[in-house]
Image (cartoon, rainbow, N blue to C red):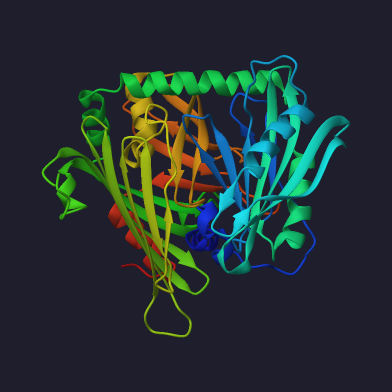
Length: 461
């Protein structure tokens, strides 16, 4: 988890057309391997499998939802959309021709766009498709290459895949782009698509129903909670379990200025969640602190996350920070890596569908407070993925409380949380891999935690 988080912190997600020629560098061709994790473009039936190591960003906007895939080294960017058409006569060839005409009208300081190649009679996955590439000159003799692949989803909907790369990186980027476009499943199970669409509708209704009393109730339950992450032993004894991490969660009413003291609205009141944790990493303990604030009307939020990772070559840890803010439909997240370089992400969101960070950490209790059952879907910023992700919560009664199976990002296995009748978390089970055991977060008293870790010779604060 920590390694993937560190990698995510280094990943840059936003590349605009203007600086692309200067920013992107070519890479040597390597074997292309796609992730087996499929990301579905909401409501379209289009699934996208990204190359392993690529960053996937879901973007909400007025022009419709889209996916953005970014190479690990920033050498290419692929945008995926599923626009509708009101013209029943449109074909993949005519849609591609319309886009091509628009692209070829592009003029820059370096000159006018020119067509590299065009194929209006492709067959991908047994269905008609069309593709073209165009060169867009930039200053200094450099150029950006844009490519498009068009595939039909339904009678009134087409999938468009857009490649943005440099002329220098085009030959290495082209096979990646063509594989992504050709491998994207179209027409996935309609029941799954309908279920996710309904979950998103129910998620919006859930967020709209939350009141100050609901937030206050969730804060009271989570005002000061300690949890321990461990691999349970076959004996069932905590003394035999493998310790992995612990954390302290504190929730309370607060002010924006406690997280952003220089903000013009520092006096704004709302809700604050602070999480302090220690994780046993391969080089030693990794410490983190996250402080998250949202206003009472959820119109604004700010947060900071700090991570200290042991450096085997220095007595001082490597420091990583994430600073985020949201106002309206725009989120800005700045991630500073261990080398001191900043990466800025600015995804556009749907505020009525997107969890604030405070809500994300209080979600099991909020669900319990509202007595929800069924499936809820939300967008949420994921620090681990450094991206906006779509998550679902499948809720059913369990004894006097609830069982919540959360899928924190599409394609992942569910994390199961048991909540008691008061909204308190009994445990959360994180699924292991093919050869890895499940891990369990469970509440623990501070004195009990200290004794367990000391008896096992583990480092405490």
